[in-house]
Length: 216
Ligand code: DX5
Ligand code: ZN
Image 1 (cartoon, rainbow, N blue to C red):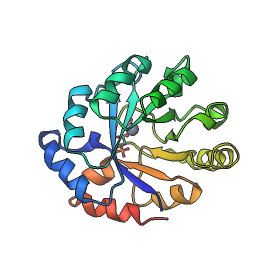
Image 2 (cartoon, rainbow, N blue to C red):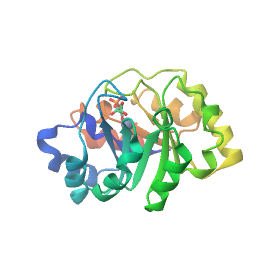
Image 3 (cartoon, protein in one colour):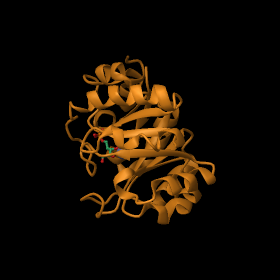
């Protein structure tokens, strides 16, 4: 079984208050908030004002996934907006260790995301300092894409590394997670599943969250 983090990106933005209520009442463990800048990824999503409002009503752990260049410039701003976990991309950081220390300095949990082409081995020297690895199982920038199967091997490799270096570190899988592939993702070693379209394009999102939370 894994923790479930619905991604707000696929939700109906005209009814974010109702969406938050549904998530609060659901089996979800976290709320995953995707921030895109049109530079690190070829898309723009939502930013600080939306996260600030959502944080006022959200009762689940809020994790902000920054798909932006120079994320270090916005660590304090996302902390103030309500982020409890801040996930930054390895590919976007020249001084990843310093940025992680700053995130933790605010009392937030620190996560590092890697793109599909980035080897898991690149995490070796930062693994002991972080709370979560977010393995991208699609190319970041859009919801509703197909899960990249090679991610399963990366999960297994990361699981082994984590066992040796930092057993408390979570393995989160982000992109293309659905009811059909969630079992093999959890069996490979994932501990947190992000799910956008699978949850929000369904007639009963809360039921999908419940089903996902029982898998594995
Ligand atoms: C993609 C985002 C994901 C996205 C997942 O760049 O990081 O969190 O919302 O959406 P689905 O589950 O639809 O692939
Ligand atoms: Zn994400």
